[in-house]
Length: 262
Image 1 (cartoon, rainbow, N blue to C red):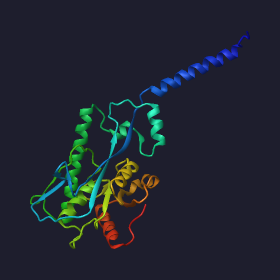
Image 2 (cartoon, rainbow, N blue to C red; image 1 turned 120 degrees about the vertical axis):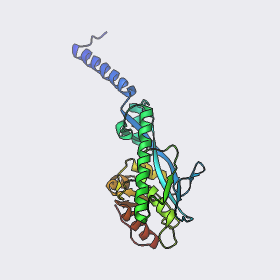
Image 3 (cartoon, rainbow, N blue to C red; image 1 turned 180 degrees about the vertical axis):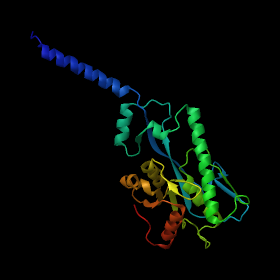
């Protein structure tokens, strides 16, 4: 029976150690979340039987078309994600692996994260209302806006809330709809002055938008690169940086004029 050399024994021992480390790495939890396209909601419609946007103190109009806010769904903050999960997400265009602290930047317990997400949503709704009423020249002391959207947190619906309020009150200003009857989706934060900010997860949100019938997608210009990389067929991309820019782009879209491009 042949005798193994010391070198062969050393190599065999090293290979066994490496194999063991690979097995441990494959099953060790990683600080990442697996993210997939989430539900979308037409802010001009209802959510669980309740109007998403209710405006009182001024006349409102009947709308057509849709303005769909989009979401992503992620593994729970305390869920264990392993190398094999990340590898699967790498090869699946309907999934992505993202650093957990980018998905849940507030950190903390599940309850603390949910509270922080809800606070972000409340702040976003307040800013969206302020931006819309400012654009319309209406006083917040006379006109009240209630925004109702269950089980959704974070600030990324701000732009769509603002556009929805404007469409409910004046539409395109000449009796028509901001949407021109289309299904338009989008994402982006908004502040009270009407500045649109980036949100993350754009590629997956585009998939959710197209899945639910959108043909146009409004995206913060700073996220153009990510948006173009995985743009679904049949979805027109329109970058925006401000509320005024979004309204101008929608006006151009309705009239068949060129719209901004990434």
